[in-house]
Length: 421
Ligand SMILES: Cc1ncc(C[n+]2csc(CCOP(=O)(O)OP(=O)(O)O)c2C)c(N)n1
Ligand SMILES: [Mg+2]
Image (cartoon, rainbow, N blue to C red; front, side, top):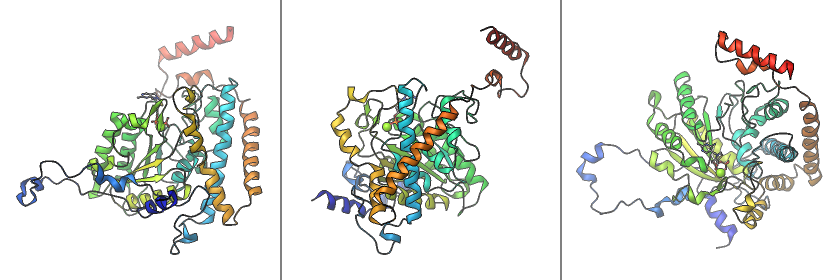
């Protein structure tokens, strides 16, 4: 089978999401359901539906199986595709600049989403602004796409006085915005998953189906080995406020590495999506380098959980083409020949080629967009770098409504020390 027809075959599967019936205890009492085979029938080979990958675009930007019943044959309007491409190019420009900045010693840390821009932006694009996001390290582009100002984004990285997200108390990439429903992450992996379940529960209690705000909890492949992932999936399945499923999408960016640990060491399952079966929720798998496919899957998932269906575990298969963070050198532990192959599946190129084929953009337009965002990042950066550090007093604020005497004393000591420094 040619690789193209293999892709076309996998296209048939989604955005239908595979589900299983929840285990019912009466089945144990019902002897008509007795299975006399000595081994369970659900074997690895039964997981096909959750091993296949939904795709819309081939790497050359052509549509794999155009559907005349769908807008543009892809189910995605040009305006949506263009809005995603813009944000993806902007994110790439920003990530490249931040990596260079860290190498120059001007910032302490940065986790880029290079090669994962489709998985990040298209998933965010499928949501409404009233929906909540509990991100992991590489979802900052979702916040920007929702309108988080570049100024604030950069200020958070510098931890300066304009870092309204975290007042300089957090590592870079820990953005947050109450107005945008983007919750500051904890560096401790996977903690955001049970929190996302809680947020979805709150939305289900406060709002009525079929029009509930939903919650997306994002996580990396490595973090799926944390206990909190299991806790979240268990609660995602069993909590049924008002008799309905939680308005929750658990979103795994499987970029195949957790620093130096490959995904093959995180699980022996055939996919991460297949784990949904064990928790009685829905699951599906999508090509994370195909923005149109991610958007289609996430829109279908969002619609389903918004209206009361069971939560969905979505696995976006992608690749971390760069280092884990600025403190990492991947050539020491992996074959960078494989990385080159993934770089050839670049999500920005794929979407740009699609829009060029549709005559929405010319190659010159794409180059102009790259230049435009590069310039935006550079000029904003020059100004943000001039913003001073947060006031010393902010170190002592936001825990007590009124500062206790011992903290007031410590603040005075620090300020006196700084005055003499
Ligand atoms: C509980 C915990 N253990 C270890 C770490 C250190 N750590 C930070 S990121 C990371 C790997 C994350 O990999 P993955 O979940 O695949 O996300 P990715 O970085 O690939 O996006 C590790 C081990 C941590 N932050 N928290
Ligand atoms: Mg990973």
